[in-house]
Length: 350
Image (cartoon, rainbow, N blue to C red; front, side, top):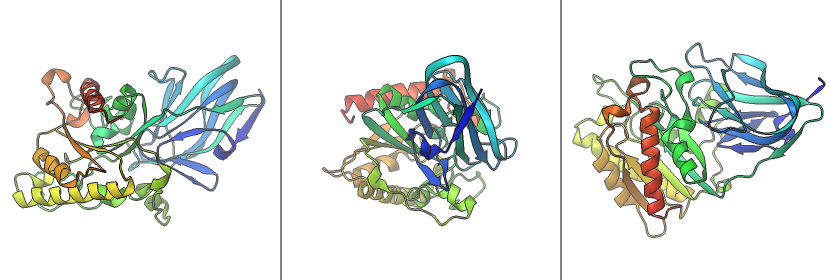
């Protein structure tokens, strides 16, 4: 079979999520960033690149063909550039293709260098849905360990953002989505062990959010690039943060007040970035800590022209099961998405 290689910018692709195009290479940034297109042809492969990430923390890619529920193929990226076969048929077919970065961006990066098609193949860009929700969160939003089981260690291979509450919520609302999520992250402190009394401020949400991909640019040694918020057309922003902060704040009133203050400040920043876009602040997904402070921050930040809402997840139940490292299971994520999407719809936010 004769084939032809194309740079990503030579094809008509729909790109979802934050991404970076540099030196003819397309970098998919946060979890669940993807490219989608209709392919009429017999063969599809891609030259993809990554730095590897070791045995447990590789970048993972998932291929969907027509059926957006069941993966056609899922694989880890090896170090360096390599060609990966994505789909093949004995006859000419028209198929819907979605290539998703399933792992999060604090681990190994994923980039598309080329697509390789049969010589007669045609590619057509798909249409985006009319509504768009952005989710800002931590490991829960990433789908950390949701394909694992209780007692399992964390591996990027058991992370499935498309089966986490955020992407599921968007699907139930027939909306596009973007994830800005990073496991272990917080507003004033990322996760710390119980015996640690100082905040973990190495990477925080207010620090990375203004940039296209803070992690990628840092590991590549590139000068940080501020994100162009004007190119987004968001209908709703959903935030699910505080779980990792609570590992530091605990029962210390001064720490809880510091969290509330910085959370309020971050909401103000989002209101500047996306004037008039409603914001929903979620709490209670994994523990019941800092819920009062999140609620208070929403009241402090809300404005008639830029409303902020508070949403509280119902507590999990033992029968919901657990994913890896005590994180929500697939069942729990589905329940969260069902409840949250119904509430958003009832509030007429989208």
